[in-house]
Image 1: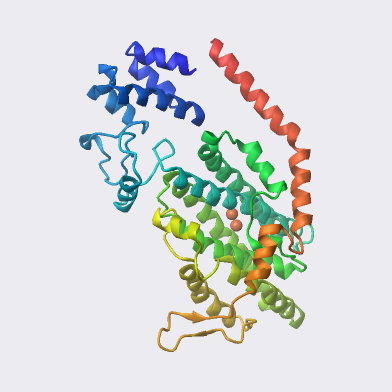
Image 2: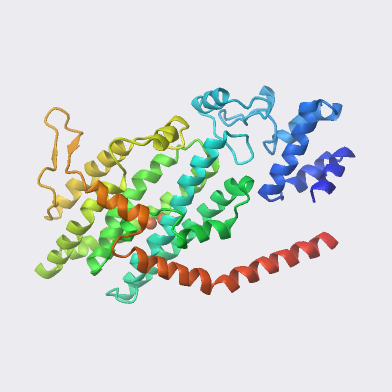
Amino acid sequence: MIKRLVRSYWRHRLDRAVIRYQYLTHPEVLRLSQILDGWILQGQYSLARSERWRSKLSRIGSIARPEAVRSQKGVNTSMTRLNQSHEAFIEHIARGNKIEATDWMPDDYRQLLIKQIHMHAVSEIMGAYPEKEWVKYAPTIRRKLALNAKIQDEIGHGQMLLRLAEDLSAPYGRGREALLEDIVEGRVKFHNVFHMPAPTWADAGVIGFLVDGGAIITQAMLLASSYAPYARMLKRIVAEESFHMQCGESVVLALASGTAAQRDMLQQAINRWWPAMMFFFGPREMGTQSRRMLEYRIRTMTNEELRQKFLARYVPRIRALGMTLPDPDLHRDLDHPHYWHYTDPDWDAFNEMVHHNTGPMSQTRLALRRGAQEGLAWARQATLTAHATHCDLSATL
Ligand SMILES: [Fe+2]
Ligand SMILES: [Fe+2]
């Protein structure tokens, strides 16, 4: 495929070549970009320097667009392969530009993105398991359908995000299978909340209400991420998370306005999930990698800013239901009413759980994931074989 495209360029059949180029997979795009940029950097081919070719290639982000053909709406310009320095990259992002998958990026930017998106994808997938346990016990058919739809969404979010991680990992030779394998081998973390048990129906509601509510706060911040494919994908994910939160809220409201036993069940679930939610946003003092992500504008808010947003939104809501929160020190600051004081969760215990999968349900859920991974290997193989056969047939037409 690459050889055919290079020959096609060589014969000046640019339109046709560019059209075909857009359908290449990412490893092929990267390889072809390297060949073309090699020509440009070496100055061997006058064609490579021609304005016509530059404008054709700018459509696929291979080289920088001339000023005149930059986006009318403004900010989205490609990072030139001829200007690959860390300072230029930071400046490019600071101007509000976004980075596309085919743009040049520093290696640590790529690695931070892979870490963030891989963990996000895995958390989406593992997040389906605590609620899956409650599908067959959901009290009505409507609750059952809503829960099923939510679980289906979460797995879909995980698959979409894995695609992004897969594209970014291509230069390291890691594909989807390897990224999925990382889950069952414990090489990638997932959110602390999904290591926890969900022993009652109220837990299923509280997961939607608090965990999906917390996820909306984090993911809404990521809509401004400097990595454009992630920001675009999150638009859909955040919209669906909003539906999940409303499903959870609906269960919580029903229980809060129910019998004394139902209210007690809800209170117990809130007590169980509250410390986990304080951990959910990460430590007050951010680590080196998180600070680096802020510098690169992969994320745009600190852990503490996100947690404060969550507290401002959820403390009044929970108290309005007549429920209490299991934190005697939870109160607004007298001098800064937008700041909430809270008791720190047991950071060491939660860190141990997340890093070594030692939570009460970690191994059970990883075993379920392993079963799904191995049990559906035949389906993935069949899909790949069918795709390869289709490509072979297309190439002969
Ligand atoms: Fe999700
Ligand atoms: Fe969700």
